Length: 194
Image 1 (spheres, rainbow, N blue to C red):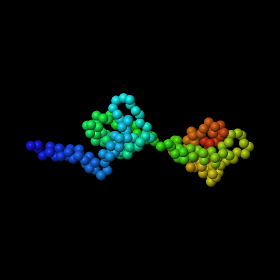
Image 2 (cartoon, rainbow, N blue to C red):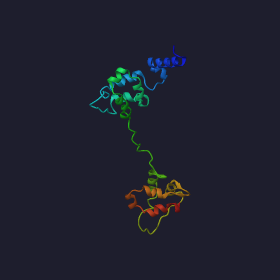
Image 3 (tube, one colour):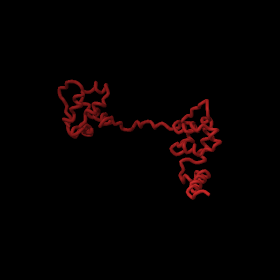
Image 4 (cartoon, helix red, strand yellow):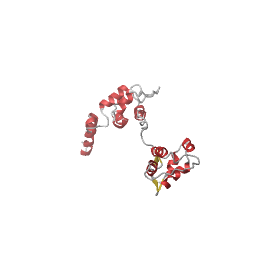
């Protein structure tokens, strides 16, 4: 007769084999139904040997793979019968995890781009609101921005580096065209007037 400890382990193993969905819990990683769907829909891609067929991320096969939590193909492999292990390539099933991963979503074009301590939006606001103060050339009347004007408001919204407004960050974001169109020294000097 087997010792009680071994009987308990044997009983747990029998329960797992008989009903893996019940043992895993109410929210299993993968179900028998998901496994069967993957084996049926992905059959063409998971045959052993050659030729190796690549699966498309947009395929029904990958859609079935993504129905499994975290695309956990190890869970599917654990549920394979001996007959299924001979019929299908375990390595190709395992590879579905990686092959069916969706690429990250494209960046939102309305999203604020941050470079250093300031944003592209802050740069655009400074260039637009301060355009009459940062033009190239020797002007007879040199306009100076005044506190409370849109230009100074825009400059004061640029983050500080230490105790100073970080206009170097705005400068670093300038395109060559913007550098040619505006006097960079005047841009860097704006905080002294605001």
